[in-house]
Image 1: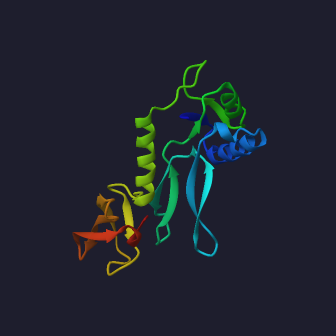
Image 2 (image 1 turned 45 degrees about the vertical axis):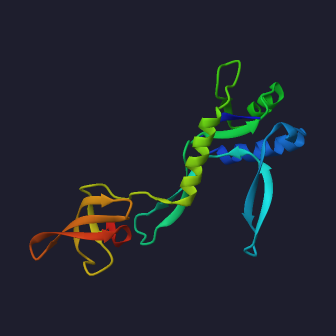
Image 3 (image 1 turned 90 degrees about the horizontal axis):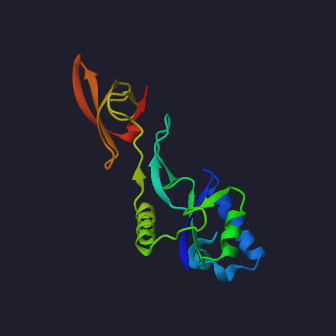
Amino acid sequence: MKYFVVHTYTQQEKKVRDILVRLIEQHNLSHLFGKRKVKVKKPDGSEEEIEEYNIIIPTEQITRFKKGKSEPEAVERKLYPGYIIVEMEPTEETFKLVNSVPGVTHLLGSKRQPIPLDEEEVKSILEQIESGTQKAKAEVPFTKGEPVKVINGPFSGFSGTVEEIYPDRRRVKVMVTIFGRATPVDLDFFEVQPI
């Protein structure tokens, strides 16, 4: 079996995956599509291992700070919006099935023949997905020079401008005017908000 890249309409990746799984079952073509074992949490908190089709939507976990909210939230972001990766046998039947799914524009490759990913490309993408789920990246909610207001801590109520951003530590250096003098203050992302 080989991995193929399927181009979809943006924001339709999950819908395409769900429809494709349903069509595979309806047409009894499960032997032509790859499967993988996945651990799933049950409602009681325990884990169970299930087998599902190897249809990958490459995503990573990021921590996003919304304006006006003090706590960050973890969200999933697509690494390649509009693309999914499907493991399948390269047959006319599988290509027709995938192309018949609403939301799919085409399989990547030449007009006549889709081209599979090589093993190194697949390995690289899977490592990128795995590293993205292990460590959530912080999405920077500020830009250098942006006016902000301190909403938590001893400098609460003061205003200033963002001087430096440290995304790995989730901190910003803000120049705040205290007693008529500009003073740099190191603050956490959720201690300030844009004005």
